[in-house]
Length: 457
Image (cartoon, rainbow, N blue to C red; front, side):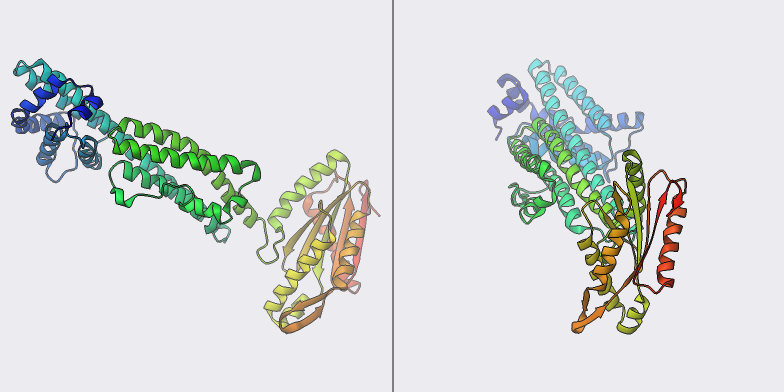
């Protein structure tokens, strides 16, 4: 049964116009074959080829749906179904808009032949509404495709970046981002009628996958200055999703797109925070040694440049220290690499207990480590190196099976004030030479030099 009040509210149609459509419905349906013929000729003239197994049947079904069901109380659902079919046929949005314009002209022509002005006006308003539904549907389907492509592209980028460095992708950070994007697709599917209401997505922001991740500790991963805004954006996204579904159920498709645009604004801000977390984790993993947790050689190269620049601006002294665990190969050969790894891990902890906040430890490679330091006066690097050497010598390295090992370290230490008229590789070569001297002199010692105005002391 036709819901007159609802249709009048949606389309702005008068009771006389609605009555004319109802009374002449069968007559209008009789023109379906003629419309199929005209529209196919129009398609051919404009080189448009919708991908349907039976184009005649698809056109007739669209025509009949609009004439028979266009004024029913399930207007939005009845029109969205053919909208999906024509979207999947490959017609672009502009082409489907022109097609509906052809239908409008056809129906007006047939109404005028009956000398019924009310019928012509009714079909104009009806096609306006149908066009609005199709237009909204196409835009939402394009938004759906865009979100899915974003997920695909971001996942590919994550996988490529982490794979290039032989790193494992942090699924605990990637999963919430992907879940959030998929949640939006799910809401779109519900609003578009692609899913049934019993397949309702979780609309409570505390119960969706992102909400559960936040509650289980994920919120602590977000910078404290951004947590409140993040939670508010998450709430807004779910609120807009609820409003979009409500409007879809109440047959107001023109509002759905408005709410999804608002949703995307909040989602862009939220998504950027999650992407930054993943990027930060990538940088951390790319610049960290997986065994010891210290910064790696790649991070050292970046930090060394920053240290030199800062020291030169503020007339500070730079200390570069390279440490090598004595007879480490013997530890591996005697006790195995598992014990060797435990020694490296404990050695890194000893380093961290001996340094100040502004000093930076690095795993140089293998059993070699490096330290960077800055001081207002020369001498700090040598003191730090000796402090570390003593701490290592007096530490009992507890490894598997209650085995306790004594470990020593040889250290090369160089102190200088930038700018030093030497390329970086020559600075490293000097420290390597000092480390070699420490080993040649019997190991478990520090060999240090200070460069004053390019003169070694």
